[in-house]
Structure formats: structure tokens, C-alpha cells
Length: 455
Ligand code: PHE
Figure 1 (cartoon, rainbow, N blue to C red):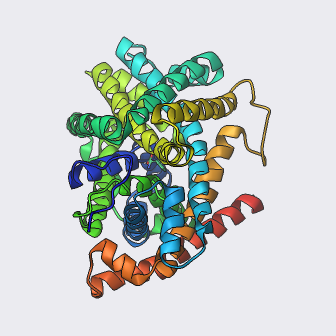
Figure 2: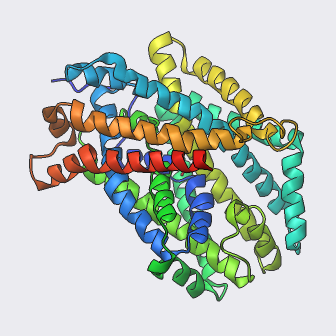
């Protein structure tokens, strides 16, 4: 039988798929969010819970997404419909894909604003703007940027154009080429920074902070944060990995591939932590500084250190590359859908999508200045977009995808697509995707929502 192919193309080999999916997974979530939530939640114990969540929830759901995408070889909306019908169920499952595309838009709009800050810091570090500054000045620079909507708009626009250009190039000439160049660059930058932090003289402080297991520091809330983050960091619940899976070569085994991606994502988060905390400790700063850790604490630290200008520049360059490869995967599902259903060229689709997310992004960046008084459910637009996606739409998407893959896709189809025998390993996945993953995610979903409403 002729193997079914995606009309968009397919990855040259299994490793390109692994690297592209890792590019999607490794982003602001790993380098900005993971270190600061680890800092806020006390370090080692949190890291351990996070690792368990990746294995028990993240890996099974990711396998489900890749399985569905590769089975249908279409964009997530059409893939859900197609695979549902194949197993004798309603085509309405496509709505899950639709919600994913919507989540992608919403994540993109605030992601692009943060990526814009990163671009601003790349330029600033390069020019030496942070050399020798103190904490107050660093805070003033960051707040000054937030208040300056024109600068924010410029950097946001640059980022949207960067992403659009790659996605418009298509799977092989855009996504794959970007992967081949950017992923090795990302790994090299990460290792250079790790080497730098090993020389700060405080490497062991950073190491102990990340890996010393102190149960007393573990709260129920930390467990929820870890579970939620394991989800966001692997790009699950909105179809990014499903879309990438639809371009995956048939020969490649899904289980091993997904484990590799999850392992690389985790490794990058841990290395980012090992690169950042020694620098923080070397300068006597607070690891629990929160979201400002990267934009305020680190520039001060770099500003005080020998070689800080160069390494600060490289550090923000690393985050920029990571954010770029993630944002590409936020746009791809919608772009592929428009090509499939509206008969548009990829370039036209991408221009329309870019204009849409660009407009939404203006609402997000306005939160810090001209729209600071406007609130939705008590949140500014930036926080609302973050909350609605990370805490509601992605978990919901994840629950539906796991229920769908576990209970609605015929077992025969799953066995065939995963290329597995009906053995213990298969049942490990089957039990996770049917029970453990949907239950665990439902719990975070409900508790998160309850806490938000109960305030
Ligand atoms: N995984 C990305 C990160 O860690 C974020 C992301 C979420 C990307 C969902 C695509 C889809 O930053």
C-alpha cells in the first residue's frame, strides 16, 4: 500500500522531527518560567514532582497527539475529524482542533510580546546598556520598556514577521530549514552559558538548589504548578505537536521518539536552571524573584561580571531563538488548516494569520500602558490571555485529546500507529492515556479554576 503523505510535506527523517518538536517544546517556558517557578516553589522537591508529571502525563498525551496527527496526515482540526470518523465516531471532534487553533492565536499574542522584550534585551546587551548597573536601574529599564508602547510595538512586529517568514516557507523550506540551523545553535549557546556559570564559583549552590530534595518545601500548590507546567512546556493541548506529528515519517517509532523529545525538553530546562542560579547566587540575589528574574535580576548580575556583556548578549540570544522555534509551532496548525480548507497559498495564509496575531498582540502589550485600566475578569489583557490559555484551554484540550485517544480511537488503530504489540508497554500507555492523564489534568483544571474564582 502506498504510504499516506501530508500535502504539506514531511520531515526528512526521524531526527528532524525530534529536533523540530523539541524546538516547539523548548521556549520561554523552559528558560524563563521553569527557573522562576522552581525558585518560588523551593527547588529540588518541585523539580522531582515536575519530572514525575512529565513522565506520567506529558509523555502519554504527547504520544496521543503524534499518533492522531500521523494517522490522518492533516492539520489538527481535520485530523481529529478524520481519525474520529475512521473509528466510527462523530466528526465533531474537530472542535477540539478548532479550540487548539484558537489557543494558538491567544498564546502567540502574549508570547510575542515577551519575545519582543527579549529582542530588546539582545540589542541592549549587545550595546552594553547594562554594564555596571544596579538593581534599581535594571528595574527602571524594564518598567520603562513596559510603559513605552511604541518600542513594544516595534519589537512585537519584528517577532511576528520573523515567525511568519519561516512558516510561510512551508514544512521543508521553512520549518525544517529553521530547525536545522536554530536547534544546533540553541544547544551550543546553552552549553557555552553552562560553562560560563560553572566558572562563577557558585555552581554547587545552583546545583544544590535544584536537586536537594526537601519534602517540607512541597505544597499542594507546588504540585499543581508542576503538573500545569509539564503540560505547557511540552506544547501539549493545542495541536502543535499533532501538526508536527502529521509530517513524521511512518517508519519512526512514536514511543521512543516522544521519550527523546520529553527528555531533551527536560534537560534544557534543567541546564537553563544550572546556568541561571549560580549567576544569581554569585551576585547574592534572590532566586524567588518571580517573573522579573530574567529581565531584572539577570541583567544586573551580568552587568557586574567579567565578560557579562558578551554572555548576557548570548543568553538573551538563546532565549530569542528558543521563543522563535516555539512560536513557529503556534502558527503552523492554523496555517496548514487554511491551506487545506480554503485553497489558499501558504504565503497568503501566513500573512492573514500574522496580521491577526499582530492585532491581538497589540491588545496584550497595551496592558502595560495605554490599556492598563482595561480588565477582563479582573485581569489585564496580557494576564487574561496567559490565564485563559495556560490554565483553561490547554488543560481542556489535553483532557479531550487523552479521552479521545484513550477511549474513542480504536485500539487496533493505536496499536498499528504506535507500532506496538499488545504487551505491558502498550498497556502502560493505555492506562495512562485512559485514566491517569485525564484524571490528573482534570484535577489541576478544577483546582486552578476554583482557586482563581475563590480568589
Ligand atoms: N512549549 C513552549 C514553551 O515552553 C510553549 C508552547 C506552548 C509552544 C504550546 C507551543 C504550544 O515555551
